[in-house]
Image (tube, rainbow, N blue to C red):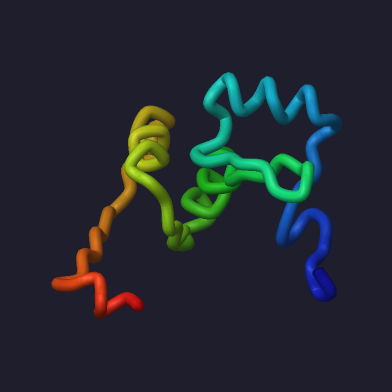
Length: 89
């Protein structure tokens, strides 16, 4: 994307195999594939933000919350549930 910079908005890993291994070793709180490319949010990226006295705001699944806790990062969780599906459509 136009104004994104490597090292700021995203970080590349050495190769696809490394990324796959990191995902298998739970080094990412969430990961997926789009357009043939793997992407994800690493635990280290969240840790870096948290340790810099900033708040890291994430929109994640319950599984990701469990991975954060397992990594020693204890999130404040806000669950938003609409009264009716019409509220979000």
